[in-house]
Image 1: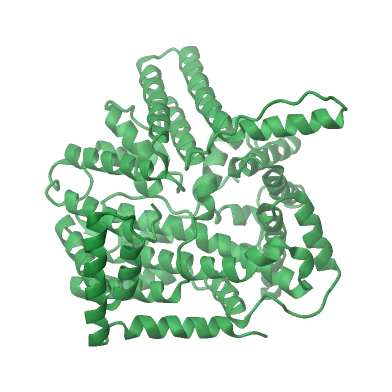
Image 2: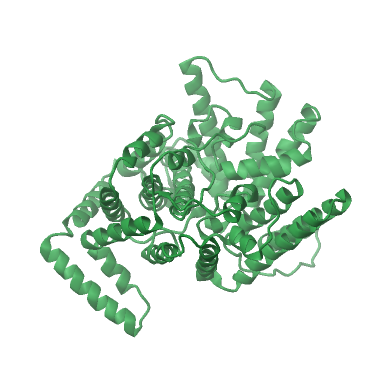
Amino acid sequence: MLFPTLNFLLFFLAVAAAMVPLRQHHEGRKIVLLVASYYFYAQWNWHFCALLAGSSCISFVAGRAIAASTEERYRRAVVATAVTMHLLLLGTFKYCDFLVGSANALARALGLTHELPFIEIILPVGISFFTFHGISYVVDVYRRDVAVCRRLTDMLLYMAFFPQLVAGPIVRASFLLPQLYAAPRMNIAIGPPLMLILGGLFKKVVMANYLATDLVDPVFFDPASFSTADLLLAAYGYAIQIYCDFSAYSDMAIGLAALLGYRFPPNFNQPYRAQNFQDFWRRWHISLSSWLRDYLYKPLGGSRHGSLLTMRNLLITMLLGGIWHGAAWKFVAWGAMHGAALVAERALFGSRVPKARTMSGRILSTLFVFHIVCLAWVFFRADSFDTVLIYLGAMAKFTPGIMQATPFTVTLIALGLATQFVPADFSRRIARRLAAWPSWALAAGAGLGAICIDALGPDGVAPFIYFQF
Amino acid sequence: MEAPPLPGADDRIIETTRRVTPARVLGVLAAACALAAIFGSSPLLAWANALPDSQAAGLLQAAALSWNTAMSAMGATRLHDWLRAFIRMFESFHF
């Protein structure tokens, strides 16, 4: 059940209607949200509801065990066991066949004839996200950043809450669970969530979908057939497509949760205006980068043990961040490129990368970071390393002409880039204006806005890119 | 990677606006849907036609068809049709 569909709208209306009589019944609201979340997840594959519940139970039991003990060694052992179990589940479902394939390739290279069989398991939607939620809870309880869950239903809801279940943002236990423990505010700000949802719909339905079907997919399918300008524009186009696709999901998730009375952390902040790679990772997929920082980079030692170890930790973090996205070497390469860029910055400038003082310096550094990010996106989007080599080789031939890009797709790219450079408080200013609108005007704006977006979009809705992760 | 993430604009704007009850939220959503059903009767019909075959789906399809016919006769579908035609025209331009 995708967000930009009528099926989801009907589902959400039913959930919103159920919230009305339960305004004063906090526990009842949570039960309704839990049932709705499992129904939402079951729409993909109901068999995996058991996996989601099992994963939640691992964290719940581990949390209780950690909270019940004061002995540090025991608490650590429980954390290690729970994290290992979560990672084993993730590894089994997501990485098993990748590891088998890689082992078989290595065996062939070594001249061995025996090959391991593939397991061919279906990847459960959202497993990377709910695994990180589960780990976050256990570690947060261990660090005493969040009170332990006394009710299993709270844990089940934290892991399964439908707005963030399948593609984030990664909401930490210390952020969402206190909202579940305490009765939430039942006075809901309605204008900004509607604005986020409509903005997300536009980014996904119009911008991401057209860029995919009209430019990016055809060019990446057969890059050798296209001109240099097409290849360059397709790389830019994919940068905008993946931003619009993923930030749209995050915006809609934040907006939907807000309509139900819950807050989610932000996930994007105009990433392509970043002037260095450290800055980029504070703006792109913020919930993942901050998760990796706090649950991987810092436990590895962070920047506390000298330059060399800091660089090693950065590289490990980005490599694992890359493979978190998918079981393929291309994601490892993508992570390695970002890791190498962060390491190079660290080697050149230390922990604080200075910002350019002049306008031309700022423009040049932004352009430089954007183009390296686009190069990394080529690895991320291409089907294989062979495709990457063909893509970059074709680009270097400087073939003239434009075959695939059109004024329409170039306009979408320009519009996507323009959104990166509007003033940072632009959305807040609009929200302030919306706050003055009466409810009937908000309803009219939302209804007409949704119809206009539907009319502008292509037929059908493609799944979100991050669903595959 | 040491600095905390920037405070999000999304979160800030939700924090700074006036608030309504869940009943009002439902009312606004229902009103928005009603308006969308008037001006977007053709996507409603397309959605109904894509439903798996069943007695209820048949009834819904018949209702959606009647509704779309009525809305077209009133001219309510013009906005949707015009925007779709405009974007298709823009999409067809080439360098």
